[in-house]
Length: 98
Ligand SMILES: [Zn+2]
Image 1 (tube, rainbow, N blue to C red):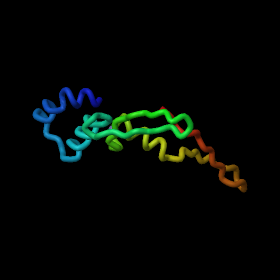
Image 2: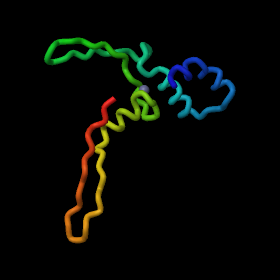
Image 3: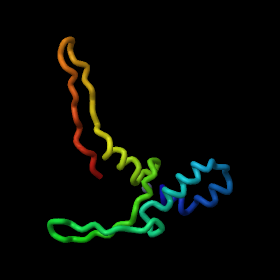
Image 4: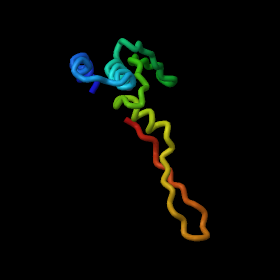
């Protein structure tokens, strides 16, 4: 989606009237994990290995980071309807990893 926004975003915005919020979402998704937003270095505490990554846009509409961040931050729980007189049962699902 980011590639499409970068390639055709300007033309799309000229053809269609977008709200300010829609324009911000397109901008964020188009810039997500590119040099425009800068980068950071992660270093492993165990082996000292280094990984350089571009920063994400953190927009919740972004398919690269928004849905992943939301999935990581949420505690996925399913509440089962308990039989009468028994305590409510909560089931936890494991963390969602890419
Ligand atoms: Zn993003």
